[in-house]
Amino acid sequence: MKEKLDNIKNQVNQKVKELKDMQSLNELKVKILGKKGELTEILRGMKDLSPEERPIIGNLVNKVRNEIEEVIKNAEDLIKEKELERKLEEEKIDITLPSSKIIRGSKHPINRTIEQIQDLFVSMGYDVVDGPELETDEFCFERLNLPKGHPARDMQDSFYITQEVLLRTQTSAVQARVMLANKEKSPIRMICTGKTYRREDDATHSHQFNQVEGLVIDKKERNVSLADLKGTLQVFVKEMLGNNLDLRFRPSYFPFTEPSYEVDVTCFKCCGKGCNLCKQTGWIEILGAGIVHPNVLKMNGYDPDQYGGFAFGTGIDRLAMFKYGITDMRYLYTNDIRFLKQFDRKD
Ligand code: DAH
Image (tube, rainbow, N blue to C red; front, top):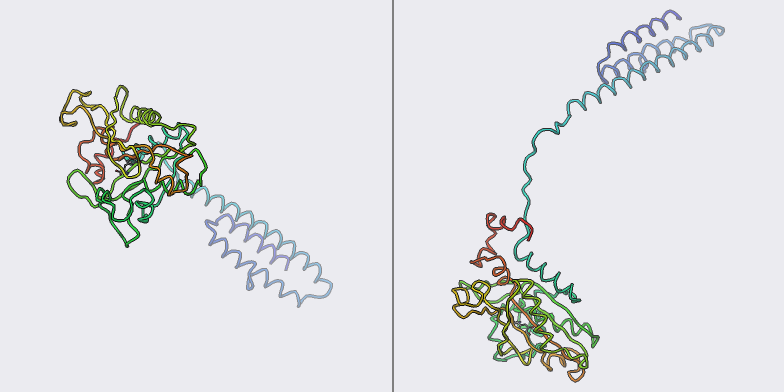
């Protein structure tokens, strides 16, 4: 029996050297240690031994079994190590190979312009607020002093979803929302940028465009005046379009401001001499603005005897076109990658 055990041990020691992979190792394990394995066979034969021999051989079998298990365990570790090495070798990445180019997107000129506007006004102490694009007639018109049937509603052809709900035609709608939310808290200094919609589809207008709205409200004694409005817009225009540009306030009409103005800026192409961009006038109209109408204050929770302020609004798309010298508005919407790539650089 001892001989048999030695044989098995030698056989294992021999076989282990020839093992190549886990499969052959498992086969060896089964052959020796498995249910029908050679060592198990010997253990079964123990019942035929004399009581004196049994513990001696039992000890021996256990010893051999431990030895074999250790040999197999070592072999297993070695195989695993080799397999890992082989895997690492096979999956090695050659980091010296040139990589494929990653195509990066670039910020859209409208988004660049919006960010620039927001940064500027934040630096002047304004809040940037948001409002819904799907707006109610109440906020888009009524609370801005434009009751139903008011002729000035014709200035903005609207997309109505129901009788009361429409796609906002102007970010001015946010004025009323902010005033109501603030409940006579002052000062209010806010801008809102965002998409607006009108039923226009001629060559120079899109049905969807972007606007920025500004609103400042403060206590009457703090005298927020036309001079403040002009100073603010001057900073705005300088930041967006360049220094040395003059502003011109032309009396106009908006239902939510009184007095109301259209604001022109010196034509930055010809510096005021007259060219095709400014239609030989030397001026380009860029903004609507004015002193907040008492009715608007009243309707939105601010006593016009105690509070006052100014508001302004403008189209961002046109501003972006002026800023970047874009000649056709459709470039802003057709997403031609060749056009957009030109903005893939720092301003
Ligand atoms: N909401 C106006 C428009 O879309 C622009 C505007 C004019 C906004 C005067 C104002 C303002 O806040 O005071 O044409």
